[in-house]
Length: 115
Image: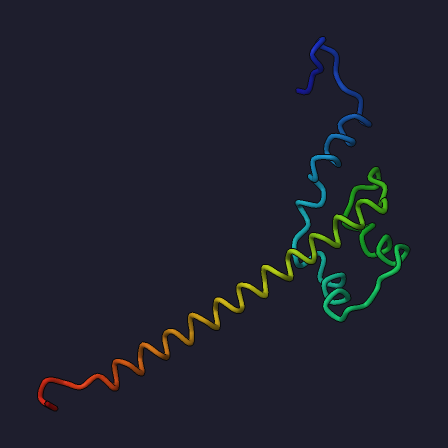
């Protein structure tokens, strides 16, 4: 499956390290899995690292240490999720307002018989 240039196989630690550095584990996290963290961030709470480790531990394989870098990456991911959700809600509100405006224009448009 995996080989180095000289034909030998990489060890498990190298594969885990490559997976971590590529962001594989944090990319797989979805909004449902991070719901508690998202709620804490929305409330503006400062979550201690120990509490974050406790929340994140079930989401990662046991071989992956929950480091400060991983915690930081998850926090950034949550912030991006929140910004994206807010932008989608704003666009939805804009689209609804546009539909209402369009309906209003159609209702107010004079017919040729009115003139």
